Length: 491
Image 1 (cartoon, helix red, strand yellow):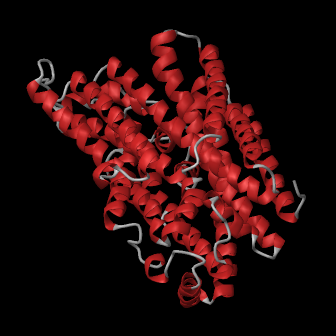
Image 2 (image 1 turned 180 degrees about the vertical axis):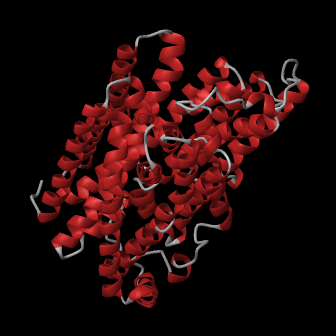
Image 3 (image 1 turned 60 degrees about the vertical axis):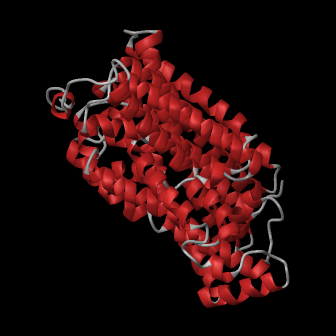
C-alpha cells in the first residue's frame, strides 16, 4: 500500500462520512426513526437521498467498465433511471407516501395479500444482495486503484466501513451523508472532466487519438463506435431503458426516502427533481474514460473494472485526482448505504415482524434492523469477492425488480390478478433470470440474443395474464379504487 495525496484525501473523506453516520445515532430513538427517519425528511434531504441511490458504483465504476469496451453509449444507464424516476414522480410517488408503508413488499400486501408480500420480500432481498455486491466490488476497485492495495482487501475494508455507518443511524445516516455526497460527487467529477478534456482537445482530440490507437492494434475501440450513443447496440440500449424505468418503480433503496418524506407533496417533488442530479453523470464518466484511453491506450490490461478508478489515478495533479476519487467514493457509498438499509428494512418489516416474531417490541425491531444491516453487509462483501462482471450483475437485479413492477402495475391499474397470479409470476421471472444469468456467465451472451430484461418482463407479464384467465383462483372481482384506500390521515 502506498501513502499518496489521493490516499490521504479519500481516507479523510471516508472517516468524515463514517463520523457523520455515527453522529446520526443521536437522532434514532425508535424503529420508525432508523427505517424512515420518523417520516420527517424535507424536500432537500429527500431529493438527495433518492438521487444518491442512482449515483453509485453502477453509475461510476460499472459504467466506466463498459465505457472502456463500448464508448459513450453507457450514458443510457443514467438516462434510463432518470426517466424512470421522473415517471415515478408523476405517478406512484404520492400514492406510495399516502399509503404510509415502509417497504415495496408492504405496498404489495396492500394490493394483494401477506403471502405475496413475503414472497416478494425474499425475492427483493435476493435481488438487492446482487446489487449490493456490485457496489462493494466497485468501491473495492476504487480503493485498490487509489491505495495500491489488493482489490480483495480493499473490498473488505470499504464494505465494513459503509456497513458500520449505515447500521448506526439508518435513514438519518443515509440522508445526512448523501447530502454531503452529492456535492462531493459533482465537484470531483467536474474537476476530472475539465482536466481530461483540456488534455485531449475535447471530443475531436478523442476521435483522432482513438483511431490512432486502433490503427496500431493497441485497442479495439474505434472512434465511430466510441462516440455513438448506440455503440452497445440499439437492442441493448432499449433493454437498459426498459430496465431502468421498470426497476425504478420497485426499487426499495431509492423509494425508501419517499416513504420517509414529511408528506406526499414532498415525496412527489423530490422524485421529479432527482433526474436533474442523476442524468448528466454518465456523460462525465464515459468521457473521462475515453479521454484516458486517448492518452494512455489500453491502460487497464484485463482488469476492466479499474477503468474509471485508474483514469482518476492518472491525473497528475494529486489534489484534483484525490477530490475526483473522493467523489467516486461518495457516489458508491451513497448508493450502498440505502441498499443495505433497504434490505434490512424489508427483512425486519416483511419477514421478522410478520412471520418470525409478530408483535415484537420496538426495541427488538430496532436491534433486529441493526443486526440485519450488519449481516447483509457481510454477505455482500463475500459476494463482491466473487462477482467480476459488474454491469451484467446490475441488470440481473433490474430484471428481477422489473418483474415486481409488472405485478404492482397490474394491481394498481387493473386489479384483476389474484395473489396466486402474482406469486406464480414472481417465481417464473426468478427462474428466467437465473437461467439467463447462468447462460450469460457461460457463453458471454444471452440465449438467442434476448436481453435478460426483455425475458423477465415478458415472462412475468404473460404468466400473470395466463394465470389470471386460465387458472382457478387466478382472477378476483375488485377494482383499483377499492384496493388503493390510504389509511386515515398521514403519519
